[in-house]
Image 1: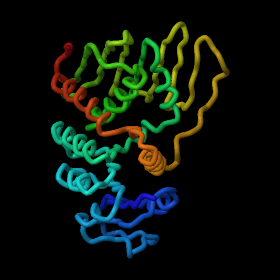
Image 2 (image 1 turned 60 degrees about the vertical axis):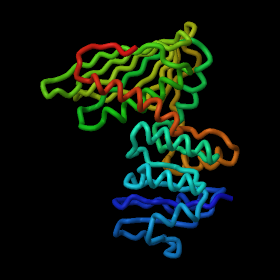
Image 3 (image 1 turned 135 degrees about the vertical axis):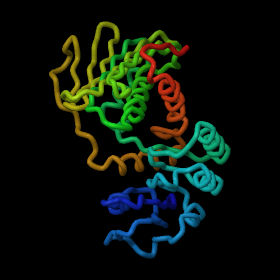
Image 4 (image 1 turned 180 degrees about the horizontal axis):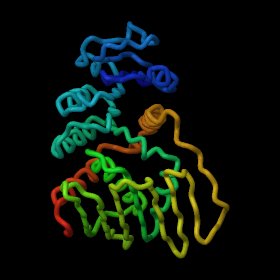
Length: 297
């Protein structure tokens, strides 16, 4: 039984303490919450006045407040033997990410990053395609909004890397920009070392949203539609059907999965090591985002 504690964001409207208490394999021993709203179901005996105490009393620390997803605090927690489940809004440099991975490896602990998209029911089927050379097409169209590019790149690139199951050999990028200097279309063409090829197209336009992934493999095409929540096959193997819906509580699902992986000593579903690979890739893309067409070798 793991001793668990959680740091909740101060602006949280709905505090997920009841759903978290339903998770098996953990015993909750601490809560830190900097906000003024107190959830009526909080056990006040578990509330700590200082976040510095919490890593000293738990095996699993869940940090949902981005303010505490900084290097000094996370390194302190790891050195005290904590497994970490972290908000996706990390305040870390590349070198700090590497140091945390090293510290966790030395201490035999695990780090998982929250990512609701990677726990969509389709992801396990996409991951299962990795044993053969294939052609992968991903496309997402969303309204133009500030600060969405990193999130869309992160989710789609992670999904593509899992589908290909191979290191990147070469990357070509085209970026179209509007007069505001913001991208309106981004196309990324990836060649993998196993011979697979992928293309990702992101469009920031005011038109109906789209988000699909198609995998072309040995004359078969499987298309995953994340907005319509269905899959289709060509040639048609089975009738089109609606897949199981996304979890109503993806946070609980991810924490439950992380606890299971800790018990079985398996790598997390989305580790800091996974995140840093795509983070470095995104940094290269962003360096040239204003250039009309370029190639990164």
